[in-house]
Amino acid sequence: MRRMQATIQVFSPAATELEINRNAIKLAMGYDATHAPFLYAGLVDELLEQAQQYLALQTGYRIFPPGEAKAANGRVQLQDTILGTGKLIAGRLKKIAGAAIFTATAGAEFDAWLRQFFAEEDPVSGFIADLIGSEYVEAAADWIEEKISGMASSFDLGCSNRYSPGYCSWNVAEQHKLFAFLPTGFCGISLCDSALMQPVKSVSGIIGIGPAIVKKEYQCNICNLQDCYKRQIQPRKSQHETS
Amino acid sequence: MPELLEKLTYAVERGKVDRASAFPPDLAAADGADELTRQALAAKISANEILQNALMPAMAKVGDKFGRGEAYIPDLLIAAKAMNAAMKHLQPFFKSGAAQHRGVVVIGTVVGDLHDIGKNIVKMVLKGDGWNVVDLGVSAGVEKYLAAIAEYPGCYVGLSALLTTTMMQMEQINAAIKEKFPVTKVFVGGAPLTQEFNDKIGADGYFANPHTFTQYLQTL
Ligand code: B12
Image (spheres, each protein chain N blue to C red):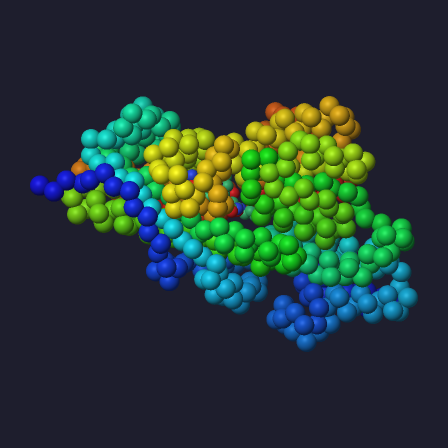
């Protein structure tokens, strides 16, 4: 039988390969269907188009094959490293045998593009461009999650949703443990002492892998962030449990 | 010439920056804050009157709408942008003392953090509301805050952070400010912040958005 191998891979998906949720951008701007008139649709479209030339999406993973991961009592173990994910995430991952850690970024040029709007005192465009960046990073994380699930299923293995340090009581400082497993500058991302990733439009996280894992539909009620705007957005998939 | 000031109030409230700006679509060909302010000055309306009777009421109207859930952050920002277009023409009067800012707010994203979208939004709204805002940028440490407070006596301070790790820096920054400048008020904001955290570190208030922040500052 073919066995899943320990691998590290980086991809640079084209922005056009990713699915962007325009409604999510509108909702993230604060507008719902019933309240204030939404006068910014044209600007959103214009900035989405401009954004294409500044996006340099990179996303990648490191696979820990079955036998290299387990979870219990509020902790997830990857090889010899213990991750203090908290009970919620460890509970969701209790059936894992392996795992994938992943990162995704919109790239440094995108950060620079954003900043320039504020320098030119065009804060509305800056605000919208910022949301576009977040949306693309989330979409890149969706993309890598699909890739990982696709690969796992070719070995008859299932995958969990993705979970990120800084969410569901998993301390954001634990990103240092994840990055210790990745080559320096993985996907062009560096991690500061404060656990801030650079470029700013970046995410990191873990996905559980195992024969007995079945992906659960996303449920907002597992997270305690009551006023998160994402609660109002149609779930794109597994979003919300990660940034 | 109250009609001109009314027009100016409306332009700022709707975020009409100048004649060339396409926003808002229903005011496409109209004069904006830029032209109307010039016209008001040419009509010998004083800078202070323009500020007090046209610009500030406009921002107050948008702020009220925001408070009632009838406007959102982009509406505050576009109005602030129009306000700034008007303010450019009033700058000489601020310099000569003929017009006055509400006061000075020193604002920065704390050391270790590079997230500045929230801080930049607060800055724009405060500026639009008539404050002189001194922006210390991102990853600003204690020394920068202390130097700015020394330069602008009587200023208020705003600290911003997006991560729980960097939020912790606020405790030290606030303590250092309080030690050297005991009467300086320090306010905190950013996604992971809470009033509880504010109280724990002994800061002077947490605000979830720039509107409630500037409203409060105006009461001090
Ligand atoms: C969009 C988003 C992202 C985007 C980008 C964020 C950005 N700004 O660039 C992406 C997807 C890239 C992302 C990534 C991550 N994120 Co995130 N993200 C969010 C989210 C959903 C919204 C943040 C946002 O941009 N809001 C819009 C801006 C305008 O709001 P704001 O910055 O808060 O500022 C407003 C107010 O706070 C206030 N304000 C701000 N500063 C100040 C200062 C003063 C003085 C005052 C009065 C007011 C004030 O006024 C502003 C305007 O209203 C929040 C959750 C939430 N609902 O807030 C999580 C959140 C910020 N993320 C979080 C985390 C953990 C992460 C990651 C570490 C996850 C991961 N492991 O990948 C990464 C870190 C990225 C990095 N570079 O290191 C946590 C942070 C808390 C923590 N645990 O540390 C949050 C709070 C979610 C949670 N778990 O509760 N994230």
